[in-house]
Image 1 (cartoon, rainbow, N blue to C red):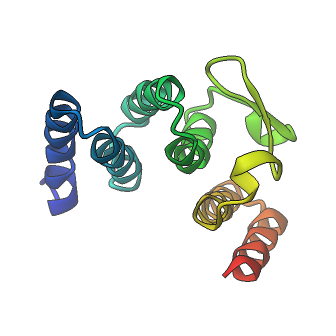
Image 2: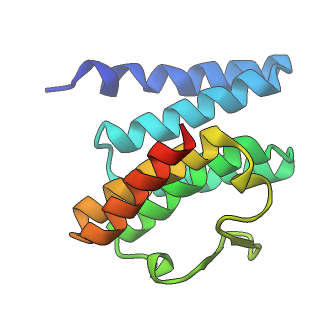
Length: 147
């Protein structure tokens, strides 16, 4: 059985391609983000989610869209951890797929509330999934302090 969100998210790929073809780059980025994020939360196979996010992150780097990159980073990190592909959760810094290192809590990512909230929520979820209660509690406290 296919749930409504699972069938609806595929339309974002069509919209993204159309937006890129017509030059509406910002709309294309928004479609890519919604597709990747909803694919994760709708339960799409994680290897497909990871590959899709990698492609989106490549585009964000190319077009220098750090906001969408920052919004995707927590979901990407969590997807990698859930598939057993990474030990990123144990490090303070995050080296992305392009070899660039981002220190959490520094740079542009620490200045945008939406990015910070997304990161807190993903860390909370990660803490629950992997039974890291302290991490989940700290993430909730940080989330509430941002709002």
